[in-house]
Length: 420
Image (cartoon, rainbow, N blue to C red; front, side, top):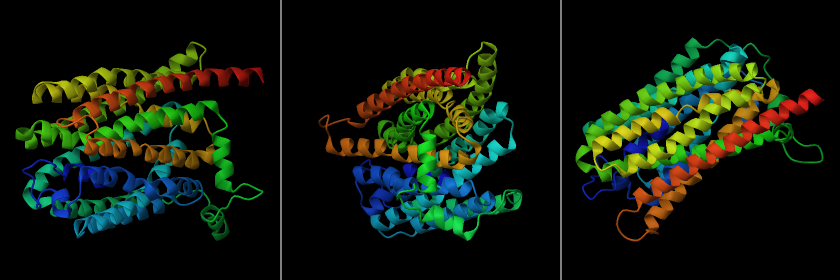
């Protein structure tokens, strides 16, 4: 996450930006190009490889998949540090996205295979908390940028990426499941659609046969749209809205992302597991109880984010940003737990790959926001503030509705199973 989101803190579209500290000035790219770089460039291969990565996680040594992907995306970060133009940064970003796609399916299927079902939401939330620690480090990249410039900051991130890869290799045990044969590798990577659907395609169709899962993917897409728009555009917005508080923002935002985001994530998992038990006691679907957490969290995030963007002072804006993280970031663990318990265990990796693909497609939101921002669709002046406030709040609200529909589908599915 540090490698992925650091560039959001290494751009500066103010008139005082310098080439040493702002990669957009050094490499001469615009707001729309930044929106593409931060979102779509990462997802070009990330999206396409997610399904294959999920299938591989169901068959191969997940320790080696995680180690290899971490090494490769760290090399992509190093390539970014030495890029001479926008095209080279785009290429490195695409490679980074491709390599990152192999890590998530391996991680969540390992959690599923390690923990009992009544603890999977909490365990998934603990893993997901790494997103907020990485986000905090990304925010602190502003401090490194002020000292070493954006290129030096990317080199520092690469160094820690190599350390992380080594830690994975040394700390994880080899996968106990059977290793697929080279023939199986070919079937997954070179699968084609013919009279008999490929293993990946047939698996996708099987997973999407559940209405609960369909709605869960829709809700997750909308929720990703909100979160990714914030991740990509919040830092440029706050640096322009409060230019005299840039370094303070770096530290405060790091605290908010790490402490509030992590707290919300872990608490969301714990609350989801508690709610699932209570739902069963009431004779309802346990997944209905788990999905109550993202439903309520997304609804509460709407007023919190609106107040954050429309606060009159830096201090009040940061206060509402903290509230927004506390109420909004509880969704990930419960949703992953519901997804993994809604599909066959042999398709857990593929389902996780589809979930990753859903998040990848949601990168269209910040890219589209960047296009609207540069086009000045709202006229001259402050375009970013209304685009961020209306766009993110709409995504939060619609995701809550979709999560609710998915929860209702869970109840319907349970009733159908009982009747059968």
